[in-house]
Image (cartoon, rainbow, N blue to C red):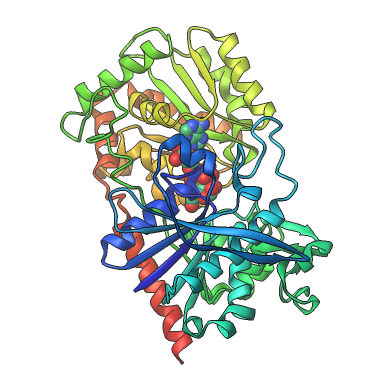
Length: 494
Ligand code: ADP
Ligand code: GLC
């Protein structure tokens, strides 16, 4: 199949969260299965320059309309490292040559022109498909930033570009909390008439809603775990679009993300001081833990349980539960490491814990790819008590690194972690610790249980090994996406 992926971020070019891991790894996995894949991204020139990527212009620059304005675009091209994926960048310095992807890194405020930026990206991405004669069987777009692609394809490009008539349109929902909803006055910027500004199309509470647009106009929809695909059809998780999703539920599939073994495997991870596998976990992980303690200036002790959290610091991730449990946890002989950035109140909470417990807690505010790998490998347990979690990647990374996660049963966390109970321990299937109700006492029960089991190293090793031996690779998920593409194509053909 000829497949075009359209995303606002992808590893290794630019990343703020799991979407980038998925867009990069899924593209590579599809290419490895023999498909011809092009990935279209905005050109965040400052991030690419920092990472030293070589990119070449393709063709002449051109203008596209944005309301009454014209925006200058130059397409550029690069090869995905270690893969046949063809990467096409939309170079538009006025919108993408900035210090952040969506927010000003200093003020942490969303850029005021995000609607203009991503509407331009969507139209330019479809222009790229037409100009480069990509003739895709499938266009697969991700999250609100690319929602407009779905309607522009349907309303304009299928008519203008004959070889897009049969192209299947797939839209993946990675997080319903972010919808790209803008005032009605923005509607003319889309290049579509006001007849599209209705409840059955692009409008939601008198705003242009780009996530809803993707949901309405895609041939098939997916989200990143089976549990989340059910959750988002309820008011608690649908963020106002649960009814719209119920209407499309026959076309909505949950496909659990995988992990990229070239980026995330303790056997070949270049960031680690020692590499290890299933057999050498004892010595390899001990070296990673010791080095992490040294680097963070924590007491170097092998026997103390080291718990960690690497996360965007937002309300989604359950920092309220961490705050409510921290006192009880830190009465015990434990160490706790936080890496992340985000909402000031959660950054302050983690900073406060580090200063109140200088022998036990370290907090690193910021984004540090290499350190995130060293924390996964050097910790004994990983915390992810999310309020909601469409899929979550860190719990999978931690299981692959022999670091049992403690998670809340929501979205992909519920679908990927097998909780340690007498039965699952006996069967050898337990990979972590799962609690249900969003309440500090429920988190504490699992923390307490995990600490008790950690003291029994033989049982603990069984949990580590069960997680490490699960197949987290993208092959399975990529095959499920192909089945979804085939379903959409067969509907288009009839
Ligand atoms: P989300 O996409 O909601 O943030 P995921 O678990 O799907 O959650 O993915 C988060 C990704 O971002 C993981 O690859 C994680 O390691 C990474 N990450 C998050 N915060 C940081 C940070 N401060 N430094 C390095 N990596 C981070
Ligand atoms: C979103 C979700 C996260 C998911 C990621 C990739 O950022 O918050 O749960 O893993 O997308 O699909």
